[in-house]
Amino acid sequence: MPVARGYRRSRRKVRKHKKAALRLIAVGLVLVGLVLFLDHQIRPQILAMEEYQAKVYAVKTINGAVTEQVEQFGYTYENLSEISRDADGQVTSIDTNIKNINLIHTRITNRVNDALSQLDVTKIYIPIGNLTGSPLLSARGPSIEIKLIPRGYVHTQIVSSFTDAGINQTLHRLVIKVSVDIAAILPGYSTMVTVDTDYILAETIIVGRVPDNYTKVLTDSEQLLRDINDYGTAKDSGVSQ
Image (tube, rainbow, N blue to C red; front, top):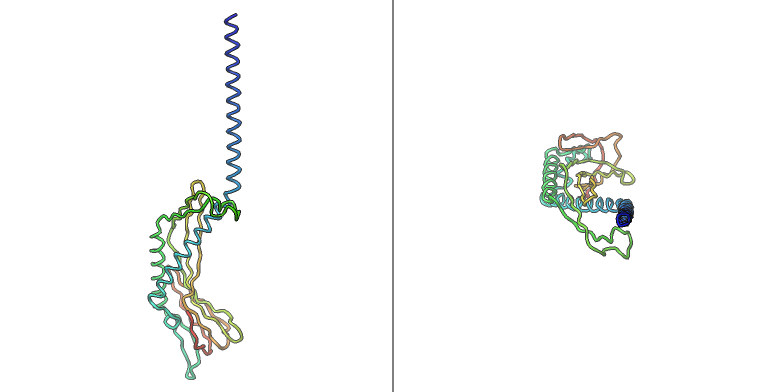
């Protein structure tokens, strides 16, 4: 009967539509699984690449800013530390110069902040072939964009350290430590990187007995601790920066 034939045709169409829908769902699930698998495989490489690029860029910017200040104002060991001698010309103490330490600390901190703030949002482009880890595909394929954004205020410290430099010799070194947070952002992938870098401001070799006790001189954005280090030694004439 015509009604029965029409009913059977209708049911066949429904079954075809259901099969087509199931195929689409299956294909969709396969694609989703593939995307998740690829994401799982390449995410560590992308995050590692972002972290590496952020560190390279930040260290370059920080070192450039510090070098600029050191060269501009000509800081040396002598104008950052005051050396006291006895009647025989022997070194009896090394006293940090508070005024100059504070001055260079402030100048460098401000200059690094200015340099990083000028970056605003920095964009770098990496060939997608670099993500494979294969030398054959390195630097090949379309480039992906990574945004580097400075986050927060730069933290700086000036540290005075004393280390053994050989027989009866001590290395006195003044170092500025700089730390800054950088956000590396790629659509779907982002990471926060803390970049720490040290820059030697001045150093010298002290010849003579090593003191039994000494303390570090530490500056940061909030304080300056001033300590005198009693050596009773003779200072070597060579000074390096």
